[in-house]
Amino acid sequence: QVQLVESGGGLVQAGGSLRLSCAASGLTFNRYAMSWYRQSPGKERELVALIGSTGGSTNYADSVKGRCTISRDNAKNTVYLQMNDLKPEDTAVYYCNARNVVISIPRNGYWGQGTQVTVSS
Image (cartoon, rainbow, N blue to C red; front, side, top):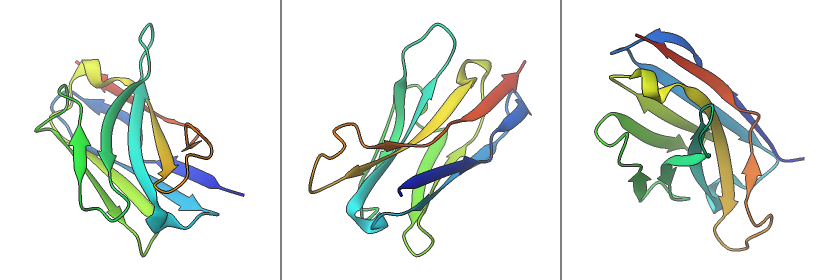
């Protein structure tokens, strides 16, 4: 079965850095665009960063541009989110998502369980 396992979340101080990892299994990893979403209390889930199936293209939310870098290692079936200069407003549950670039099944892709990131002031 498809499984996305996230790690790397935790408690950090404002201005600090954190690297999230998402290890995928049960899928042909290089056929999936990977992305990170986050959801904080009282807010809708929002896209943080997206990377194409081959790693050839990336996209970031305006709120994290310049502070976050998404990357992937297709040999390890893993996608990363490097976050720098963290701010309290970055506090959220971060979710990993995988979407097949050929067929939209599932329509919203596969999701990880989420990892908590808490940034203290």
